[in-house]
Image (cartoon, rainbow, N blue to C red; front, side, top):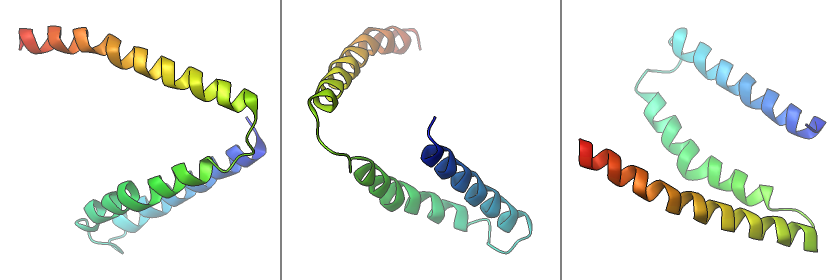
Length: 90
């Protein structure tokens, strides 16, 4: 794992710890957690995804992207029978 990825993970854990402490010390009201989660899902995570695509283009990258698309499609199709089986037994 690269040092850049490790430092980003550490920053994420520091932010999580700060949020946890703020809630425990009642600096932030408990109801604010819902709004922080919504902000993360609607703003922060999409920005993170967009910035992660900021890589130089190469044929290797194109091949990896194609493999990811194929594998994710196969995985999605493979889960359909499992979901149908579970829903029929519920």
